Every structure is written in structure tokens, then in C-alpha cells.
Length: 113
Image (tube, rainbow, N blue to C red):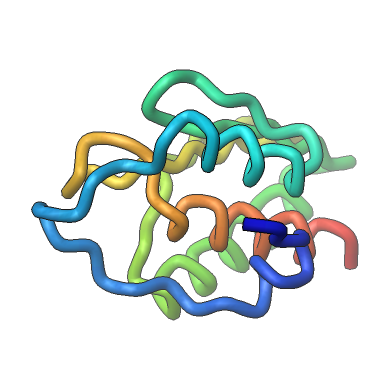
């Protein structure tokens, strides 16, 4: 699985079925190499984004919400005045799926704008 962040960012999330297994440690390791600044925490991946002010933070949160709605894959988001923490996991399978990495890549691409 030689996937780049650009490859991930152009993919679309697929519906996860409960029978689908979580990604293997090897798959997670390979996909983590494609993301910048995300932390692997067992069954989740998490990243904190920093901004100059509350307005920029909220604009980013709204953009993440739009991506999440479009992909039908929703993160846990913690918002502060000038920071936002985004955390992904796939609840239906009790671990990480490619969808988590697709959305993380889309958010990383958004943050670079």
C-alpha cells in the first residue's frame, strides 16, 4: 500500500460494515507516514491545529464539518480560542479504517490553504 497524502485526499470514504476488520498495525504504520503531525493513539489518530484567533479557529471547524458531512465520517472535535483538536476513529469496527486517514489527509490539505 504505497499511498501518498495526495492520493488519500482525493479518495472518498466508503461505508464501513461492522464485519470489516480494523486496519492492521502494518497498514496503520504505512498510512501514518503520509500524514503530517498526526498522533496514533491505539484506536484513534489525533492532531491539534493552531490559529491566530477564534474566528480562524471557527472557520476551520466549519470547513472540517463540511468535509465530514460530505464524507459521512465524523471526528471528535475539541475547540479552544486559538486551537482545535481533531480525532478520528471508526466506531463501527472499533478501530481505525482507511476512512480515518482519508479524512485526516483532506483536513491536512485544507490546513495548508
